[in-house]
Image (tube, rainbow over all chains, first blue to last red; front, side, top):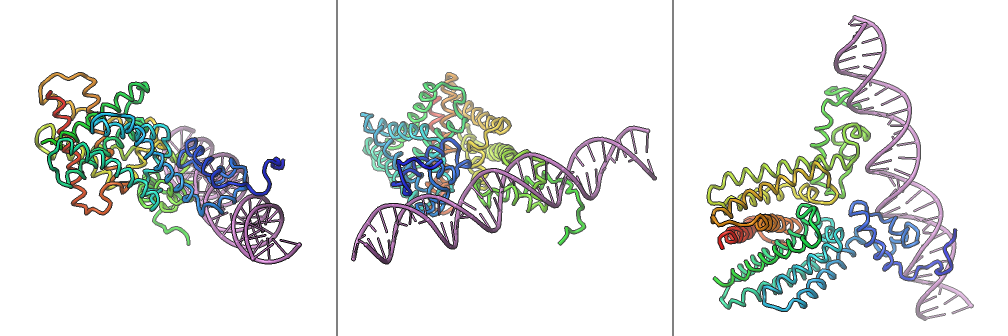
Length: 206
Length: 206
DNA sequence: CGATAATCTTGACGATGGAAAGAGGCCAAA
DNA sequence: TTTGGCCTCTTTCCATCGTCAAGATTATCG
């Protein structure tokens, strides 16, 4: 019944192991089903071991959320770079990356945007998302090279983020495209993003 | 230490009392801090009493979510009726009612749109929301009296719902307008709704 | 080599959700 | 009115949870 000799009393890299098992567990059981003890069990470690790496369960969740935001940024920029086209295409690309990450990590995504995980480090991750959005919106507005006020730029960033965030959120909750195929759903998402990007671009050209 | 004589062994209307205390508790402690025992405590009843009215804690939460959707519909229609104007104004009105409810009941709103509360009765409440949105979008499209396909109407409904849902969600999580005054925030919300409504109307007129 | 610090285990505490069983009160049939 | 059955609520119990404290084990570095 003892642990095999592959490791002794010390784990070696328990922190990373907890993050890894925690992330899987989160997707399997949902935010409310997440358990620190089960996390420890999967890392093959006693139930109190995590305390030496995370002061509390919320600390572990915050770490997961923080890393999630980094991945989200990466997914957005990767998809935007692939999309070569005008400013509108960039905006759509960011949205595609956003939605792809959310679809691949639905529970983590929910956690990242839930009141429970509102810490400083996590908020910084969210701020980076807005920076990405704001830059793309700026580019879209300037492509019509008329001057727009900072307020308009801010409000268009709100609008752009709200559209893509709202769409994927409603999809994940089953409110949009409940019985659609994956292909059909993507088409619906792209349509929403296109309408969003068109609106942003047009708001710069009047 | 005994219970005062105002009530005896039987409570009278424990189910409603649990719903009431549960709703308050939910907003105070958040979804993850919600506790069935605390709920019973506030209804001045033993911790096992709720079991006779709700099979499990999730059942009580589902009931709260279901009632929340009814209130949400009411808030939307009330605000839309107040807004007399074109189809665009109706669309904006629905959005205002939507955001007003969410702002007044942030945790309940989060619960309603979380995977945890995905039951049949709750889904029916969400379907009613989409019906409201779809009707307003239809009216907006027809106001330009050009024929549009069912697919376009569906996608514009997606878009309209996504915009208002995304905006208020991001506000509640602090991602939009973190340090804004309440007035400024309303203005930002109205700007997002106006952009949404304009896009919907315009999509019918091309 | 030895001491200090870091890491992990064991054991305990209070709180939770849920099940089981009994006590108390309501109500309709006799 | 009495009585039996049924619904409501309480008490008690169990497994599990997060967290804390104390001890065991190992790594690190003087």
